[in-house]
Length: 68
Image (cartoon, rainbow, N blue to C red; front, side, top):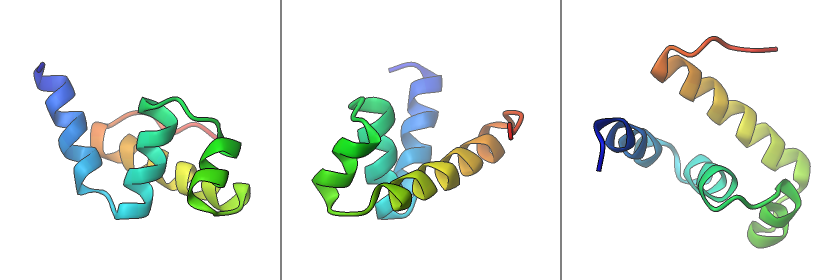
């Protein structure tokens, strides 16, 4: 495992459970927002909010520029 992958994995593991699940399903398993919504029983608005929060955390953790 590369250092970059290990760092990303450690970051994901450090997230609250809901964010960890949603980000894993969306970015790693490549589920759509609708599929995640159905799988975990949450409205698509909630999934979108969790993804936004996760992106913000990731941007801060890895010093990525934050988009609008």
